[in-house]
Image 1 (cartoon, one colour):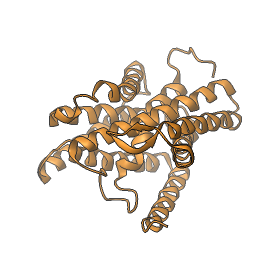
Image 2: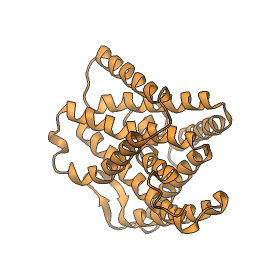
Image 3: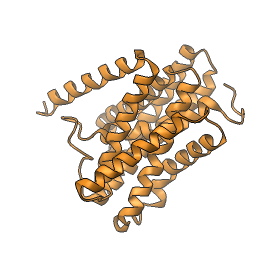
Length: 269
């Protein structure tokens, strides 16, 4: 048994407990907890982007915190929020393809901008989900992401043969990714009964959310490789940094936000 297993289990237990507390807390406290998680992830992204010096990083964190506060004081999400979430979905879906050949030579300011482009849509998605009155859908997001992650791990261990992205993450396999997508799809189908909504919609939604969560994980691995880091941080014993645990959820959140809101009403929810 790996010597890292006890810390991993302890950390996972604490994270699950935090999620449970957030789900039953007043909205203001829940948003504060989610905002804090995003700030911690942003702090680690600043490190990956090569922002040197305590003063510079502190200023970056303060500016990001102020940016998180702006949409809270604005009216309910509208066309601008939808556009930013759609941009976030496109970014996480395409970044691994668009940047793969040039990420090693990318400038720090560009890496910083890409981090902002990746995280801002997730915050808007959180506000959209809670604004819809269905805060439980945030739990659904975490369930779908966990399903994809668990499926990829199990199928990768049992059947994994062909590397998925050896340059970015040597442990991931094509077979594991296929298994993760399958489990996320099944989780979406099961969720449709809880939500009492279209089974087809949430089955496809589970597949899409699971797929985007995997792309998010690979994209963050790309930026870690650029910075010469194995983990984004050391905050979570046995897991690495906060961004190591939340990258998949951050990537998938804008898609779920769009599925919840459906600004043009084109899906059969």
